[in-house]
Length: 308
Image (cartoon, rainbow, N blue to C red; front, top):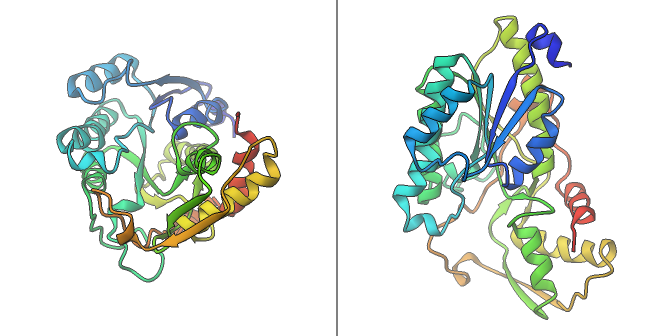
């Protein structure tokens, strides 16, 4: 779908926050077909300052705001609660208020960590959130702030995000596999590793349909789960990464010989994690016809893009 057909010859301005993050970096490329992309990082838009957020959006007057910025240091958030809430809750709320004021569409990313992980099957969007840590609580507060603003919004919950660049589990495992002969990885937390490239491409598809719906006055705001298909544990993910890397990245000197599975209690961290991070994507498929690729296929594609 061309931007002309959606905006009647007006090229929309798309503001992307968090341009240097895993998702933000991919979004800059994925959303170019839709309109004029204005992407910013923390140096250009300080989400720790409410006034900066409000002023920046009023100056740019974007037609679409895609908020890919977040405070994602899960363990550190236990100590920096005020900053986590400012970035993950207060600032998204201000973005939503300004989106309402200028008539913009807001796309915001949230997390599986809004749930407590005790359910024995995938969480749906209608399940009651119950976060276990400050990060999850701050992200849930951000969702509520957006929902209460009255703006047109789409909140996309994702999980276990990885990419061929940045800071993530996949790259950490590649590094550790070259440093340690034995790894101990948690095996009793289950989720769906999700590629940032898939998230960005799915966002493009979602935005195009949402813009058409808005033009026809048929748009409904909502929360949607956006993850890859399939499930694994962190131990299973690590095993798959290293096994695939030995084939796809032969130039790596991988010395890891054993990957031991351990329970969560043997890997103590400040922030408690949900045991079950699975999310149902049925609602997303029905509304936007976005079908999730297999996480292992996405992992292999990312490995092939890793620059050593």
